Amino acid sequence: MKIALLQYPIEWANPQANVGLLNERLAAIAGQVDIAVVPEMFSTGFCPDRPGLAEEWGKGEVYNALQRMADTYQMAIVGSMMATEKGKLYNRGFMFRPNDTPFHYDKHHLYKSGGEAEFFTPGNNRPIWEFRGVKIRLAICYDLRFPVWLRQDKHNLYDLLICIACWPSIRIQYWDVLLPARGAENHCYAIGVNMVGTDGAQMDYNGHSAAYDTWLHNVASFEDYESATRIVDLSIAKLRHFREVLPQWQEGDEYKLENTTVNA
Image (cartoon, rainbow, N blue to C red):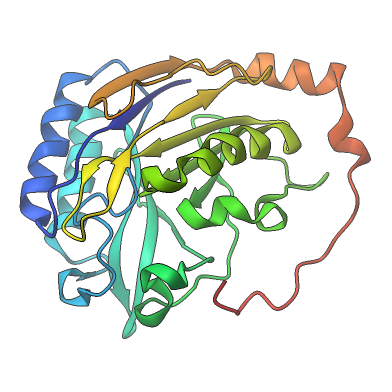
């Protein structure tokens, strides 16, 4: 499966401009990839204190534009956006699929220090999406710090963990460690896409997007602050063979998540 990691600056609080930027970047890789991954809250930047920028899920201009791009370029698009549903506001992760209905996941661990928990509602579902034969789990930024939330079990394996983020440079050392750690403990490929630049809240982001293979080699490294697209080709057959040779996943502890409604 070919996956594009799109690391670039986000125009602060400007959905129309960000949709246009994304369209340009997707047009440049049309026909080359199965999935394109963009940073967290790609249409606005991380501004949870501006709920007026959210749109109703399934009806807004950003939603319609994402579906149109997925259909036009025949690729899935993974990211997140501010969305409302039944009167509640979410940091909603998505996978828009060509000629099909989108998957979605609502961020569970809301970042209180950034004001997210004050405005957003946490999601409590842990879906695994299947696209073109690959099972995918999505994490959104702060979720990455919580291994139990992302822990797969013997009965419901996923092949690929994708984490999208607005992870600031002042704490990037944690991102650099946690992303490969989640891949190692879940015996899966791990992809992380972060933004670069300075946002309207004067937070600085230096990127460090990455894709880790079964041996934890970073096969899609970026320079600090680099605005670029990297395409990786991940072999699911190779991953499944790797799991057969090293079947630690079969020896994992059974567990049950409780109290999942708390804002983390």
